[in-house]
Structure formats: C-alpha cells, structure tokens
Length: 255
Image (tube, rainbow, N blue to C red; front, top):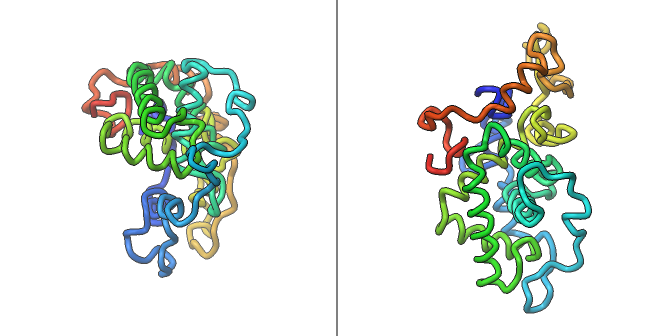
C-alpha cells in the first residue's frame, strides 16, 4: 500500500485475519482451533458494568484528561471517535487494543493530510452517532458502558454502513500502521498479531522458520533507504482524486 495509507509491510496471514475479523476460517496455522474473535469475546462478557437502569458506565477517567492535543477534530468529536475505535478493537484478555495503539490520534492526524477528503464524513457521522446514542440510550456515546456502546455500533453498522466501514478501516490502519503515522503506539498492534517488524534482510536461520524471529521495534522510516523526508511529504498529501483506485474505506466514505 502507498506510504500515505499509513501501513507498511503489514502481513495478511490466516492468524491475523482470524484475530481481527473472527474465527470462521477453521483451524489456524498451528492446527489448533482459532481463538474467539474480539467481537465474540465482547458478547461473552461485558468489559464494564452499567449503572442500574441508566446504561452509563461507572466512574471512568475523562477522555479529555488523558488526550493529547488535537489537530483536526474537536474535543467532542475526539471523545466519540476514541470510544468508537476502542470498541472496534477493544482491550481485553488478548491484550491492548485500538485505544492503547492511539488509533484515534492516527485518524485525527491523517484527516489533515492523506484522509482530508473524509473530514466532513467524520464531522457529520460522529455527530449522528452521538445523537442516536442520546436518543436511544439517554446519554452521550462516550459516556455509555462498553456493552451498550456495542449495541449502538451494531445499530449504526446497519443504518449507516458507509460511515461504520470508514471508521473501521481507519481504526485498523491506526492500530497496525507504521508508528511514524501516529498509531501503533509502543508497537502494540504489531505485538497483537506477532508481526516481527520491518526487515531489510532475512538470515538463513530465520528463513527456516524454526522459531519466531525476535521482534524489531523500529519504524521503516528510521532506515536510510526510506527516509523521513519523503514520508513527511506523502503524509501531508491528500489521497488520490481517483477514489476508485483506493481500498474500501480509504479517503472517501462512498467507496
């Protein structure tokens, strides 16, 4: 994928797609039954209790208190997006998720550059989501308990599929991208899928695949052959005008 997409050398293994999208592919590469998907795990156990009758989460840390400076989103929009991303790839027994990876920060940054054409879609879509939560659940989306947020998002997935898909694709990018682009903080996304990192050469021992290679925690742009100057230029450039050339969810919510 082009550098502006924020994903470099992201493998597409059977295990990774089972982890992200569900366990419907039969046995995994080790011959074992695949682990339940994160969405399945959400259905088995609620991540936080709800206040009786209100659907609101018990005392939570205020998102604004821990949020870094915003570049393109308003504080209200960022709170909604942070909660949205956190439910798409949640923190659970498998480890950290999109919140820890700073996927929302990746999106906020990219909306001023490569994803600028999606800025209006985010502005209107996040407000529609919050209005729906207030009308149907009696509280702002970010204030709802996680399991109630899941219910709201399942409704949005049906009623507003283009916007849901847009945020889903960008959340995946922000969780697993090269950390240069503002996501995958502390390489939690790469650790989640056991991706060992960028390698410019592979030893004979590593080619034998006898053991999982030791992780290389390094951005591709730390290598001279790539260079941060070129990355910075592409990072600021909007996605190509011909959106038919882009993967679903990239740059335009209509594709």
